[in-house]
Image (cartoon, rainbow, N blue to C red; front, side, top):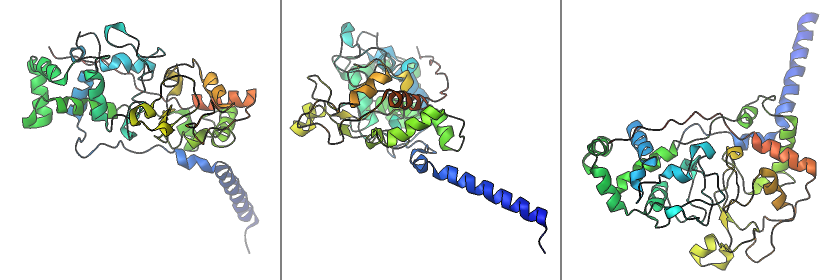
Length: 334
């Protein structure tokens, strides 16, 4: 005959397990947002500690700009979510550029780079601003000659790349390797995904449901990095045709790459031209569904959001900022 106390304890724990199971099942979408366990590095540019260290030096190296007054970090500042804090970037001769600098956070998972996808790899992306006449404005062969005048750099490149040593290709490989190590830290949202129900607020949980439901944000901001890496016309005003200007296809007009939402609280202002100063303004843009035109994404439809919905969505988005390690400046060779 079964012991009544034993049977009672067994039934009690079965009920607890059933309740926990029900709680987990209440948010089945969590699994779609689980962080990856490793950083992807391409076979033709594998990771090494030395290469990443060299790339970090080059990322903060003013000798890679014509007037020695700009670095990659000028527009991709770690203090501002690896972007800049102005609506559009500042280029050579203190000129205003047309677009806001996109973040390099989690760039290792990207498919194409820049707002219009004109770079097929991080290596191509690294080369672009150095040689652009409106940005760092320095031909790569001149950059290589400058670096070659520094014996320590020659030693570093030989150590990292062997006989090929200091070349333009290896400059971009080193920078790209460093950029791939810039990964957003674990955020409160990640802790919630892993099972800590107290990691985010009730408002943020409602925001998560809205994000994946009525607000339809997850139609484009998918996966752990909150981007589909695709290009969409979201109905913003302006003359910049984005992807369409590059492809010449009118269907691509005004389409820009979906940005990641990781560490989004650090990355104001928002959009490709930095037009929105805060997240509430970004959310409000989607309520009417954007400017109606032939190129408008079929994902863009009016979204009836209440004031509470906007507050909950913002609360959720703020849980995506991680506890990132402080970035130390490298000591540059001289």
